[in-house]
Image 1 (cartoon, helix red, strand yellow):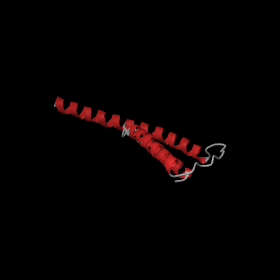
Image 2 (cartoon, rainbow, N blue to C red):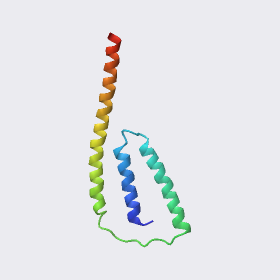
Image 3 (cartoon, one colour):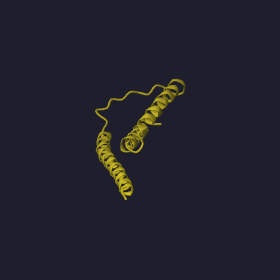
Image 4 (cartoon, helix red, strand yellow):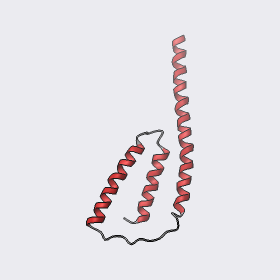
Length: 103
């Protein structure tokens, strides 16, 4: 697999983890577990099957930085709105339970 493919997979994983952490709090743990396993498997492949890749200089990560910043800002909005919806739903359920108890 090429380096741009690994970067795109990592950015997608980062997006899923940051966007849906409020809905699934174990997502960062599973992403970490996945990354540890993937690093070990890739290290094994590099040692046993492939030649060492040639190092190339890069000035920065290019367009990926802009994409990561956009995902981070979107994640804040999604998590705040998810948290707000959860609080509103639980408060409505508590209010409806109180009103049925009073009657």
